[in-house]
Length: 261
Image 1: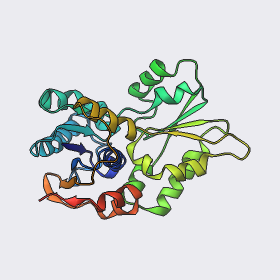
Image 2 (image 1 turned 180 degrees about the vertical axis):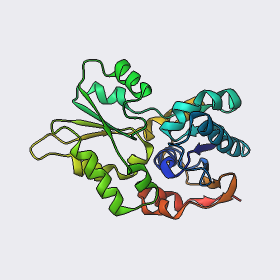
Image 3 (image 1 turned 135 degrees about the vertical axis):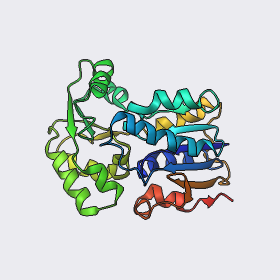
């Protein structure tokens, strides 16, 4: 079994680690785009073109499924990717976990990139899945970029700024960018208020990994032997995990995976 994941940068690490934990026997193909990152500021047409090139680089390795480990790419490029690759390769998008977060009753804060905050896409998700729940959209200026480069000072500054915009009575935070899952505990510490119930964080990595397995008729088998291999593609070229990835537990987990030969 071979599972591919794609993103412009290391935001795919959380979903990749989730796949690894569920199926340590799966071969992993990570397709990144260092030549074209970041994707967020690009026009939808330009972003779709970059995403398609990254997806096709992964598809050349004949995976059983492809996970789009990026919220922005899912918004703009998922229909094109599916039209090009399916039904041969099922394509799994990443959607903010607004529905399970709202099920807890709120109040809910959605931490997302400035481009996604207030977007029709996110507003539609809120209308569809969080009706009757008070939701605050929190733009996280510079946080994804800081995580991408493992810039600890910039991460601290961006997290503190977003926490200051988060209402004190929020009980649940949706991590609306895959990069944010890599610093989830720092976000929890910044938002947790004294005397309040423990803050609940909702990311997408676990659900996306489980959905990928379902689409190819597989089940979680965390007890399987750790025989899976790792292939890293950098704008189509074979390479290694970027150095900043190794600053995070998810990247360190993957560092121990044998390279594909």
